[in-house]
Image (cartoon, rainbow, N blue to C red; front, side, top):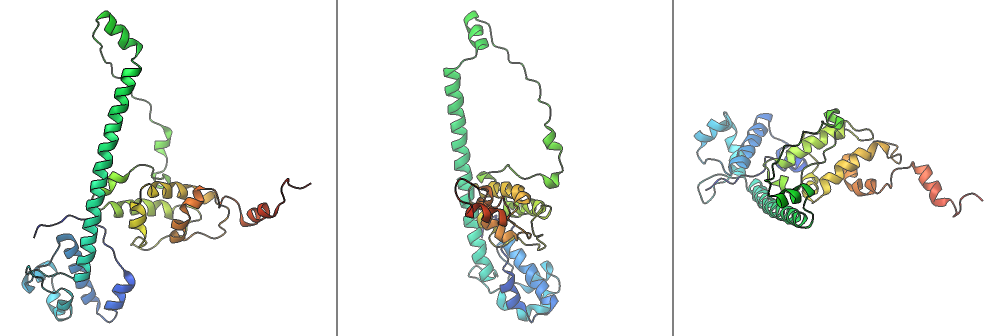
Length: 270
């Protein structure tokens, strides 16, 4: 079976995992997690216990418990069925993102070429026109490099991500990489409740994959410290729901001021 490359980001449902392993020993849980990770990366596990011992030393002591979690498939390899479902779904999503990225890149390149062609035909430069009229070959001289902008020297921790695009989603591990960048800025932002978990919120992948959402989220995060409406720090899952409303300025003023604005009659105080 050919190995399918997928994102390094593994969907982990903590509550379900805990419920299925609540009475297990730490050693059993450790081997279970290692085998799941290997299956996610490789697509399957070997059937032979001796080879399983090689990739997870000591697993034989727990195999009576773990064997039912990794049944044999028709191809003679072992897989956890639920992990395989998530893996197939991840591979499908990754393929769609790659197709969308290639299509978007090709379209953007074609548009740029068309624009350059149109501008060249409509607005030839005076130097170019004079050179062609006099039969002088046009010589291109490299323009001097611009001075670096001071904004590039600011503290990286407080720099909000503004690059990227839909085509970036074709890179392996994009979700984990984007989450690492976002979480670092989030935990350094005023009015943001620190996120201590090693795992991203369950909604992260779907939201980050939505066209334009990631850039809007970074922009909204930059505006969060100035949102006077929030008396207490905002939870990150609630922030995800507020992104567009923050950008629209709904939370710029304190609650009392906002309510006073609503109650104030037209024309102000007369």
